[in-house]
Image (cartoon, rainbow, N blue to C red; front, side, top):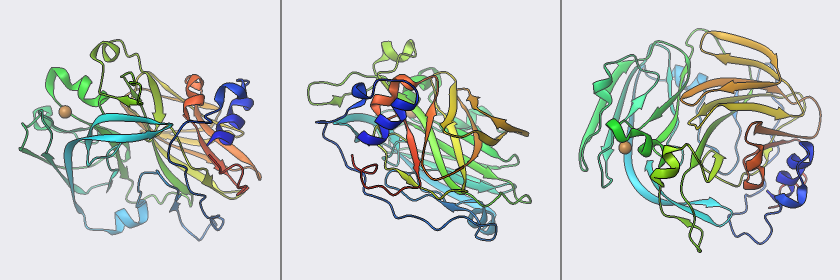
Length: 332
Ligand SMILES: [Cu+2]
């Protein structure tokens, strides 16, 4: 990602020299294949690149059974963040963010959380209109089952629910995206991806290990680093000129995510029942989500950023959409 990060930094007037990650160990994303262009008849398809959360999409989700069951395991794992950093995280299913939960408007959703960790955990999904006591934590070894029909399309956050200490649990990694697709309105053909924005509130030791969440930092909403999709390094995302890109964005926090794509304008943002067109930057507060669409106007590279968090560009907080397939762009 070195070249990509530098390119994005130049575009916003940040010193490219400050963005070098040379010498930092970490996983080098593999080059991704160039996809065929999206056409009016080809339907939507998820972008495929290392590290992107899996996504089935509207067509597959809404064609499936109207009862959806999601099984999540709360567990503690040490995750590689890239750039030589590791984090002792609390997770759903051992990943950061947790798996994306996809349902279709009207589905009966069952979420089962098995607690394989060493402290109590639960689950709260913002997609559910339900007695909040159903979200509460269960002790290690316990299982929480939440069942409810989803009635409102949108992009939602889910996260741990653990009473007065919920904040620490979320900030330690227990979060993910839940998408409720509209059943009757077919989304435009697009290249799709999930973007979960979050932060880490701990300081690395000499080996690059962040041993956990620092309660003092968490209390002050003072992250050590912020990131997209739980990684500090990202493979370029292969697109074609003219493609519509649809990002299902969730902001875990802290603060308002100022979503901007360098080199284009957001064509449509779907936020709740609102549809906003042709905005340069869109604000998504902590604990919220939106569907953000933009078009690749011509051959080149386009960088998805939080315009209020450009300070984290040297830490890889950028997703690059790339039509060039240039091996130098794709080299870490
Ligand atoms: Cu928890």
